Image (cartoon, rainbow, N blue to C red; front, side):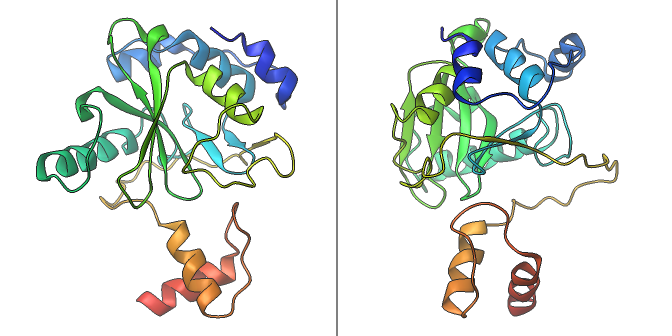
Length: 222
């Protein structure tokens, strides 16, 4: 297993490590979590690698919360595709646990097999709007280290992912909202970028979409 020190040397953590009450998190999930993920979460906190890869954390919002509604919603969508044959899925959706996502709409999954040996879980990445899957034979920290060092090229990820070098950007604190979350998928940022470029707006290839572009897109589809 790749030591977290390898990742932090490549991409320094932005803060002092923070202890998380993992017993409560694992109790809420009903399953033990990989040791490398726990270290990663404590060292880095919520945020994005290369302004593109977001790893779910215990907070700060329901959309990126490990114990929030998104992992189960995504699994339900996969199950529907699996049962209806919409897209070929190389893994049983019941064994896939969403551990992160990207600005383009791909998701990162733990392949939770064997279920009771989380340190042996591998990583899978789906295609945002297509049938392609990529499987990495290693842990989450090993996956991030390999991708951020340029050793692993995930076909679904942008070719210029490392153009500015490996980086980690912490999320800004967001107050937790307890009201029910509407049962709808996350916004397709790739579709917004495509619409914006087709309509003369300037948008970055990845990262945050400007608020005026987002507002214009929402007005156009409403």
